Length: 114
Ligand code: SF4
Ligand code: SF4
Image (cartoon, rainbow, N blue to C red; front, side, top):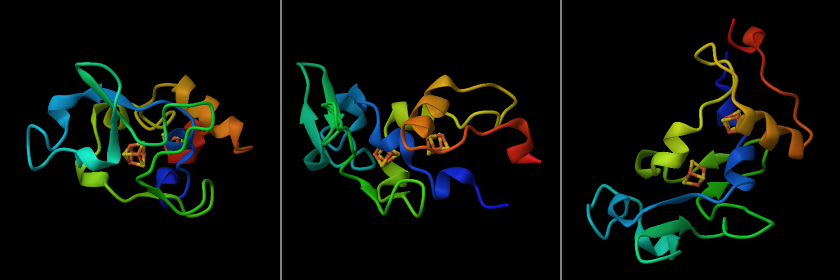
């Protein structure tokens, strides 16, 4: 089974992705490239493209629901790591459901992972 996130990407084009600046290359070379971020306040950055109603992360390539993928996967910040696809670990994920619904994609179910 192909992992559903490998084509989906809906959550990367729905929510603001905000995180502490120390998760960026301002602090560590392994962090998110600060050039792909915007400053939100003295402590937080957000991914470029995600701070508005038509949110779409600058690091997302491809088409949502078809072939979307994160071009910065190894460097993605904590909000991206923490938003889990629904039922992958036996738990619901309202944000995953909400993002998918926005793009007309059906919610993941426990059966998705069997
Ligand atoms: S909306 Fe859900 S399935 Fe889609 S990429 Fe995000 S976590 Fe994965
Ligand atoms: S950094 Fe990658 S995983 Fe995070 S919102 Fe952007 S495209 Fe999605």
